[in-house]
Image (cartoon, rainbow, N blue to C red):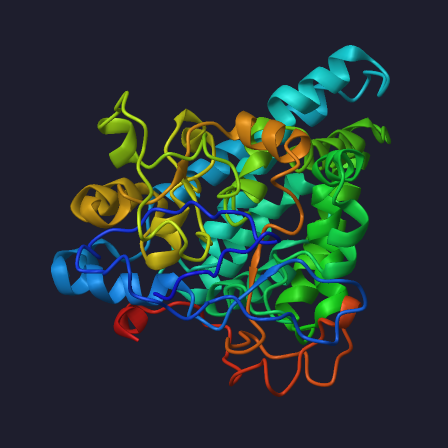
Length: 423
């Protein structure tokens, strides 16, 4: 992969790469960084590149080296039972708080410690189900996602799916990947207070931003999600004697699940690059071979920053192993229960990659360290595919609308199939 030309204005980008031992350190390489598109309404400091996202090529390399990994693909029966348990827990908590003041410390503590953790778990259950990894039947997955949506309080699952699958197909592609902050967001929020605001209200950014980028078609699944959710909210209120506390408990749980909560750090940890700082994201290989010697410069140190980070810590137990994010993006058809197996089989591919050791550290560093912030994302002006349709002719915010140049062919929203592993 080409290197970055380091200038006084371009910070040193520390990344880790494997199996490139034949690279000549004195060989002059072209820069993988390109100027931002002129359509941006503010001065753009994202890392723009023409290079392909890394997951497809690594997937093909892993399949070639370890063809047995394809046997890990397919639905996980355990998912539906976990969803049932967490939904039941949240409904129980909501009912028990029906007579508790919303200003009570018990109400807030329950919402933060139990509710936010549970609803983050349900966010990620819906994420898992969006890849058709609970049932073989697409409709079975849609209905389970709507059921998992109930304690979230607002209809969400049907709208999430096409955006998320497009994020996989179009990682880093402006106007398609709605996980990317816009230039206007980064310009306004790239300060200590701005980043603190973003981390506190990031659930709202992820909920509202996609509507300014493009809109998939409204389908009968969206309608069903809306009707079921509103019916549940009404029934819960009536069952609790007309008290609104249960409903507000669920809403507060959802807000806190995407705010300053340890599990919410995965939103930032997954794709914001931390390569402008020289600690905290050491690869497993580096952690295994800790040395007191001063690290010598390496000819690969100036590669483009990593686009995806994994986290292998204990909070994965609560979050469907979403921390194994390189593994998930490489193989979206492998369920959460088998991502560690994938990592173990293909360890030579994953252990040299940078990874986070703590999600709490991620939030702390993102807010306080001036070398990490809203601009630390890799973007592409072209490529990608829309899943589920929509977006044609839409105008986005900050010059980041879909264009004929950026959007590839549309796909239906049947999601990932095992046959796509080699594509």
